[in-house]
Amino acid sequence: MSSVKISPIEAKADIKRFIACQKNFYPNDPHFVPPLMMDRLKLLDKNKNPFYAHSKMQLFLAERDGKIVGRIGAIVNDNHNIAHNDKVGFFGFFECERNQETANHLFDAAKTWLKQQGMDDMRGPANPSMNDECGLLIDGYDSHPVILMTYNPRYYQDLYEGYGLQKVKDLHAYILDQNTFVSDKMKRLVDLIRNRSEVTIREVNFKDKTAFAKDVKTLKDIYNSAWQPNWGFVKMTNEEFDFLAADLQQIADPTYTLIAEVKGKVAGFALALPDINQCLVHNTSGSLLGALWHLFTKKKTINLLRIIVLGVLPEYQKHGVDAVLYQEIGARGLPKGIQYGEASWILEDNEPMKKALTTTMHGKVYKTYRMYQIPIV
Image 1 (cartoon, rainbow, N blue to C red):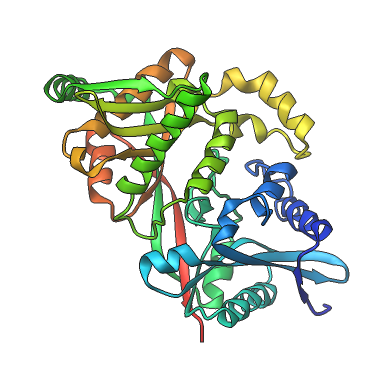
Image 2: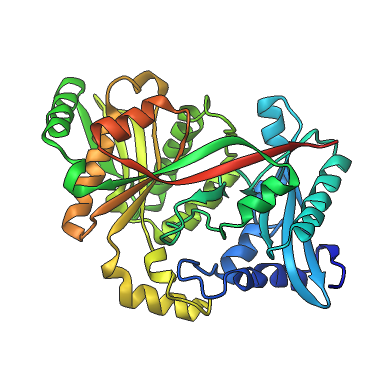
């Protein structure tokens, strides 16, 4: 077998190759959802994505005899290191043939570049940050990834751990079922909370530009405040949040984009997205035209929402606002044929959230994603 060549890339043509090669690592995999080229180009564009205003990234391709056999990105997130007072570099966008030597070369390339940037540890996967897709799927391979969640072959875990990467944190995805989600106990609890704390729910205004901009600012303030204590969390800049909001505006449904108020004051918000991957998993070509066709013809069959963000301001976190938001999303989804919800991702040691999801809402962990780390020596 010929040796593997690892090359750093910058040119747009090579970045397109970097994106397009992903499908080669999932032959005949019925659960792989091909990414759209235009979406990935936007994510990786250092001029358009505001993440790169405070961070930098180097992409690498692994080739053997002219064929791409792997890829990886090395990322320095300066805002993360400022927030956490450390020198952690990240890796992401990893794909690789089933070959430990190839994987070692890719991880070495990322680690060497991060060392040159002054980093002490390498953590991942993050594509490119914890505010984006992150974590290696290590359990729950029997279904496609829900929207904006990762997916990978089983053997990637062996490649990671064969290199010496070790677990630093697990992220869980919980499945919720309408048949068990809204129990009599939960109904009574939510009714009590609504009345006692005067909790009201309203939709984000998508139709009026001024109102939408105001609501986006509200969501950003809650997000950056509510998640502040969480492991690995980094506040999003105004530009990053606006960038994300513009994307989500294209696929979000106002029905599931909710702001909670307590006695007229903003207390929290929830964002749930219809799992359009149920349509896009059929788009085996990965083309935009194919994606639009499958969305148009299959959108009414979507039966799952991903609860992607649910946050409550610290001063209202003991008022039960989160339970009201969960119940409201479930109630709104039922008439639209939504039978299931995925709450993801949840830190493995987020005990209050775990208790609410399992005890009150009868949710179960059905997928696990792992963040890995290794010292840079």
